Each structure stands twice: as C-alpha cells, then as structure tokens.
Amino acid sequence: MQVGDLVKHNGLDGWYNMEGKIGVLKELLKMPDPRCGRWIVHWCDPNTPRYYQWEAYFPEHLEALCK
Image (tube, rainbow, N blue to C red):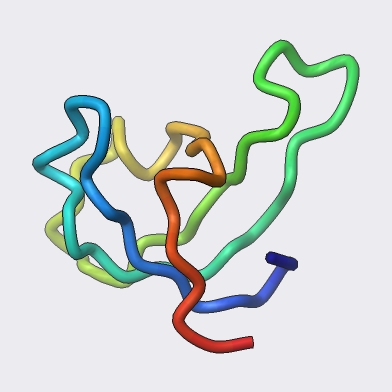
C-alpha cells in the first residue's frame, strides 16, 4: 500500500464500527512515532467521528481497493 491508495476497513480486532468504511491513505507513520508502521487515513464518510479520523490504523485492518 502507498499514499493515495483507496482502502476499506475490515473491522477486525474490535473495530466493528469502522467495518466497510472507505478512505484514502494519507501517511505511513515512521520512526520515532510510537505508532510506527500504522497508517493515517482520510475517511470519506463525513459522519466518521473525529477520534477515528485522527487514529492510526494497522495495515492488516485495511484492504486496498485500487492503486
């Protein structure tokens, strides 16, 4: 996956409220961020709460829809 890819959240590991949400990858966090390896995603659904807009997501929770 790379910045700009369209992704869908799969809802694993208790993230059921994000299941099926579509977004665009904005940034892959790198060192020294403690969330290294997670993605910042711009979620396309305007009803996504701010908390979930600012959260960083594990790659295994995201499915690339197109590149």
